[in-house]
Image (tube, rainbow, N blue to C red; front, side, top):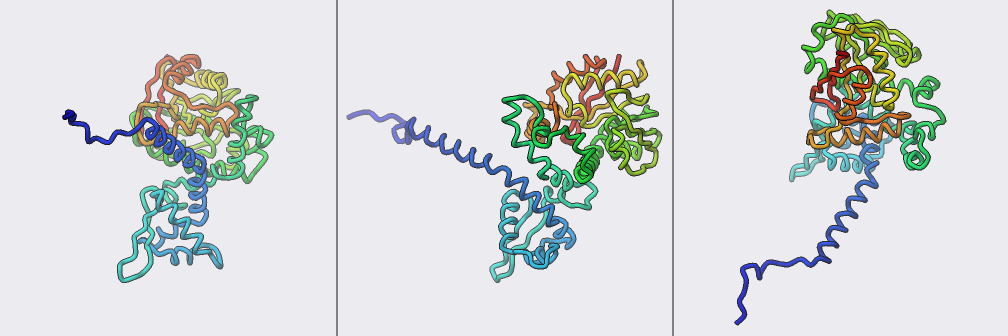
Length: 366
């Protein structure tokens, strides 16, 4: 009688079956990536219809018909709305509570994710969603292959000019861009001002280089009123900046000169430029700082592939965003940041992790 092994009853999967399973998983993955655009377009739809705001205004989960009643339209299509909501519930943007056995309608509620879609929320990503999903900024994505083949800027290929020139010539885009940047800055600045409180203590004058309409430096000055804030950006940008207590707006070009200060602040600026341009900017920062006591505070992305924090993948995605939107922008690893800072005149630095997409890079000229 033939002897039986202890594993005789274990189902053996043939190599062909394993390969077929892997191919099926690969196919599913490609389908998912192919239609990933649906994620951002569904978010754009929800923001445009103000669905999160409608639910929030009721202060409780509400029915589809209640949502439809509040949409700015004389005859909203509830069947379409139901399909959009099914997708967004599956994506965990909204919740859906099934009706009770006795009947009734499904109730839709907010999640921690959809609270970031509130237009009037203190912290909101709604303007950022509207900007990134706008045809002005989706068009350059179609030019990435051309950039690989020919070099050059995806944005320029799509629009015939760099993004900053396009903004200066297009008031509509300039407003969309500045609104999105200001609201995004408010989110990260809340994390910065809380995490870097000791770093702002000894600063008298702080210049925010590329500060847009001044929202970031205004948050710093609000949290630390002893600081005199200077918002420094291109003239057409500061021309639309609102007034903030303790902040003055100065128009200029960071490639020419930067106002003198005790410390310089730059949020999401250097990731928009190539290494050569970044070194020019850093050297100008170096000239504007006291040699012994000056410092530069950079709030930017640092790619760390083994960090396993919730923003890891988004930081890598942002590197492609830079390819699409900035002429020569890129996201950098710590090794790349170290090289850049040394060549720009800042040999000492430390990286401070904060609860945000960005990190703080504090660097010194000596």
